Image (tube, rainbow, N blue to C red; front, side):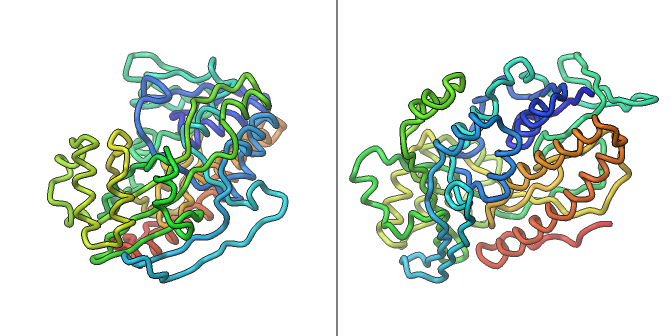
Length: 401
């Protein structure tokens, strides 16, 4: 079996790792020219589903590097008002036997570098998929914008919210604008003064601060327990990690109509302009919160439009399927988007491995799709509902199918 994966994100790469461990031939095609081409976020929460999936698809050494470079912020996910009065305290249960009790905070680039380890010959950059053809009597050919093509037994669309695979395969599947705009950035903990600025109560797994008109700030620390290169060098010297230092992820969000600019203008702004745009959104808030937003590294800032999939029913299984944001992009309100994609990768790896041991390929893919559509669209609905109640994204449209 040879598997083609479109997209090298946090669904495609874990799948490639899992298939490699299972002895299945795999090639990943990514439209970006390189792994660090663009900002896609900073701190990521990895829950028990994500940890379990990574343990299943990574080599034992790579998983140990992942655990060693992750932060352990604890299980608190609290909500405050804009004057730092506690509105809702939540403490998630700890899960025995998992690093961090099942609650880790990782740096996205670090996780991507771990997931790329050992895949250098399998990942092809600058390969934007434009279309595919299902070949009789079996297999599929993917075509890329540079005129090249690749043929395999299965094509996995892991190419994100704007998935070209989904648009061809499931044109009825909707992705809608949720009406929320986010300004992602980070506050470096470069010195004790910066660290002391953030009250300990705001250093949990995730902290939401809600102000007038449902404007909000999301805060989450990434604090390394040891230098990353030191950890990788001790455990798996072949895994090369970029240096990084502790920081606070800081997300400023508001309804799109509260921004004094068009989307076109917003997405054309540079870092200093975005920080200047964020500060009026927290005017009159607790001085510490204002200072946190003011200390965001301008070079780290970028805008995001929150979008969500509209759940759909099952489709007829073929040699093409979808994974991660390509099929179930969701609001970040409950912080499980990445974990759901990791779960997809683990389950799809298992099903494709079954197909190499006698199970019909279409039956194996159908089993993956049936399971994935259940838990993933439950997460889409839960994320949309919590976001709508807390910070005002549009409600999820009526599901299709």
